[in-house]
Image 1 (cartoon, helix red, strand yellow):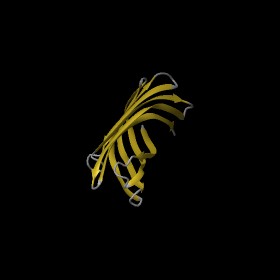
Image 2: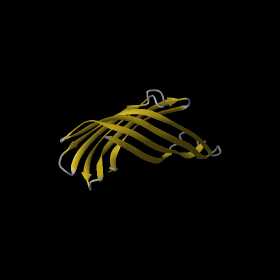
Image 3: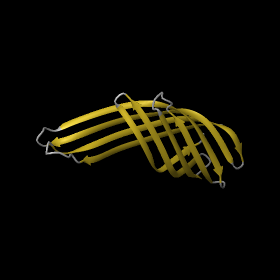
Image 4: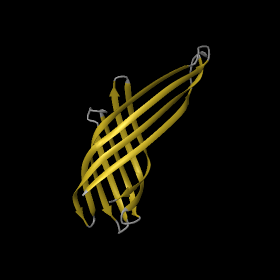
Length: 171
């Protein structure tokens, strides 16, 4: 009746930055690294032959490191960096619809932050799941996650969406 959902996401993004002006700097680049780790406990509140519904909660932690570098022009090169990290409490729900003995669809959503970590965060994903064995399944689908964090000098408003793959182990 209990499930533990864990997640790890790592992003490393870098982009050249045009530097307008009169040659004070010859160019630049911006880099952002981010790590997200979450642990969510779920409890089955309803189950039948067609599937199950689970409710729960947990925590999602974030770490961001951002660096802006300006290349030497008339002025010497310069680099500025900033890091921030926080943890968000989240509440969640997951529904699983069995399509056959081996195939199912999963819908998951959570909301959190509540001003304790970020102002607000949410995520939703849907997957098609295949039961490889009695204890192992694999999943593929689409995920969307939103963050709204504004504390001190850090203001992060971010939406990310894309494919998701995963695996589940039952014991």
